[in-house]
Length: 254
Image 1 (cartoon, helix red, strand yellow):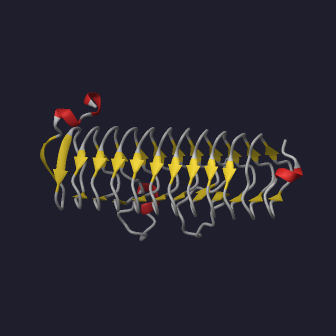
Image 2 (cartoon, rainbow, N blue to C red; image 1 turned 180 degrees about the vertical axis):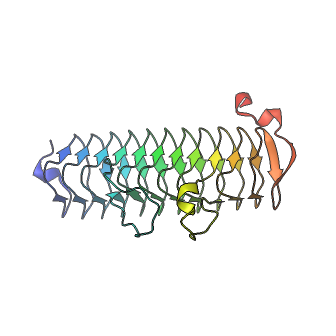
Image 3 (cartoon, rainbow, N blue to C red; image 1 turned 30 degrees about the vertical axis):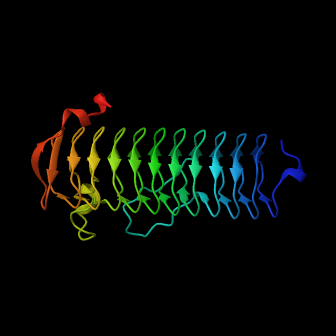
């Protein structure tokens, strides 16, 4: 356990907080109740860690980060209510300046969450996932190992992204064909599915429930209205197949 002299300036500790060895705190860090912090963790200034959060070995939490935030939901929100598990950060995660991670988020080993990004409740990110600056990952979305999502993307709720995908800047995904009208939408909301190794170019728009096949390639600025076959290049508005993905670009040949 840490000695009082090791604690940062104006550190506020809740009850039953466990802190490992060689943890460094910046100024004005607030830690809620029942938080667990492993060893070799570094915190910047003005960090807030909400109750029950678990932070793994060697994590780096930069200035102004909020961890374990509890959502405030609209009465008409489709978000699931009920108990939320604690936030958990795997070993060696980096959460950059101003990012917000909600309660029940699970980050695998070595994830990087960029400046001003947010990850909503009940999201699971695998090992080595990168979420770029200003990107929003909405609730109940899963992201597979070593997937890269670049800056200013909108990753909608109820979405699946598999391993080793690449999503370029400003990609927009959607999950509601009714845009908030009629009760029918509640049963039909579903985000896109992006299969292993698929790539989505900058500024593309993916409509609700479309599936981007394994190793497919969506060209920049395309609007995807239908499923994309595996290993297929699509482009345009609406996106249409134009050719196959070259063999030298497949993951198995990297």
